Amino acid sequence: MAHHASSKKRIRQEAARRTRNRFYKKTSRTAIKRLRLLTDKTEAEKFFPKVVSLIDRLAKKHNIHKNKAANLKSGLSRHIAALA
Image 1 (cartoon, rainbow, N blue to C red):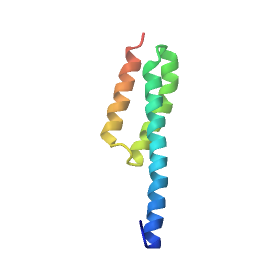
Image 2: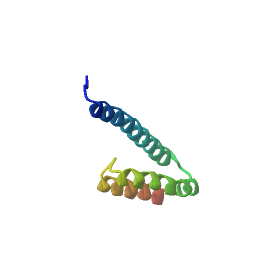
Image 3: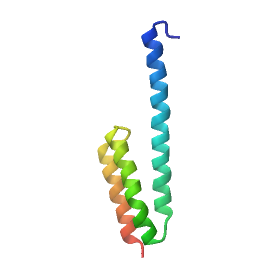
Image 4: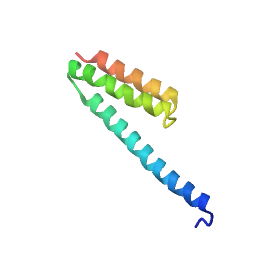
């Protein structure tokens, strides 16, 4: 257990950040899955910018690597292009 006030504060901050980061990551994973399950091209094209925004936000805040974000966006756009 921490003894210093600064250590206790650091533990509180890390817990809050961990919770926030887990929420953002889980939300984006769910959105990506939803987009991949869509079969209607117009629906997918309408939902795509929202998912890209989530992915960009994660990369900006260093929750995921910028190259992973680029790979995800590329794969999703290919998926949408392949829809009939």
